[in-house]
Image (tube, rainbow, N blue to C red; front, side):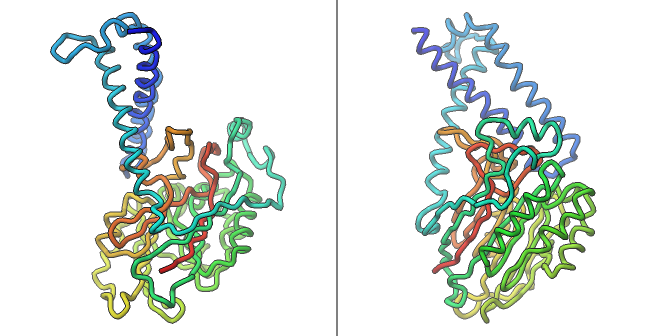
Amino acid sequence: MTVAIFSCIVVVALLGHGYFWVAIVNRVHGLAGPRKFIDGTTLICLFAFLTLPIVLLISGQELFEHWSAGWEESASFPVRYLQFCVAFCLGQFLLKLAAAKVKNDPKTLRQWRREPVSYEIEVDSELYHGTYPKLLSWVPGNQSLQLRVDHKQIVLPRLHPRHEGLKIAQISDFHMTGRIDRAWFEMIVAEVNRLEPDVIAITGDIVETESCLPWLAQTVCLLEARIGIYFILGNHDKFVNLSRTKEILTASGQTCLSGRWLQVDWNEAPVILAGNERPWLPEVGDLEEAPARGVDDLPLRLFLMHTPDQIAWARQHDADLVLAGHTHGGQICFPLLGPVACPSVHGTRYTDGVYREGSTVLHVTRGLSGRTPLRWLCPPEIALLELVR
């Protein structure tokens, strides 16, 4: 075996090494366990991620000579770990290829165009507050303030004619922490209003520090929609007073769907709305009392979920359209390798985009911000969804 071939094997193994430890972190962050457990597991994975390549480097000669040792032979841990990482990397590539075939199926996502937003404010490092955010703002290719409007036509199999053409603006994951200036969120709200949506759906993680609660009055509370504005909360909203956040938003005329279902009429045709904040917030109702489908497959069932991990729950209750956030679109994506960070028990399966499972269509937005203001190949998103038959 030549050095060149072995070098390629090492590169594949290093990719598999990264995939493996990031996969563990992603799944742990999709759970509702104690914060100390989640943070502790993350630190352990980070330690393993940084130190195991050093172990392999120290064992370089042994790896070169015995990397292909069969399972019947005695081999050291570095050799077996190299083999495992190569196999894990190849497995991840196959899974990503399979996932790509079901994401954004043109039979469900009929049209899609991404529109850059023209800013009315100067987008520069002055919008970042604190040393850490400002340092990240100088990272080449950081798209954390490069807002996009994703216009999507979504086909719903059971859509009533009266609901055809309805436009829903989905926004999620503001993560108001003070690290990004309030002016950024004011601009987002102005852009959503400019789009003149019929409905606005907010899918959680709005504000997470007490100092940013007053921002709601100048930002989210100023949203406008012809039919209505509906919201749920997310796991990061637990960092502040949940009831206070709900109180501020509902006082502005918005409707909270946290752990409940609601029947309304849109364009004189019934719609069932529900909000699922599992696994972090109180249990959502089981919808046993929701009206059954009648003539023309009404009512339309639209569910807001903070995480796409609850897709099985949505299918169980026969949802037509499910809107979710939480994943930030992976936040950091690489060419060919795809998204990296995705806090989900499914890993990177539902990072962003449109998915159809049976008669249920799931849309996962990339969200607007994050605690860490760094994005690569994953710009923040306002999703404008047009419902079509």
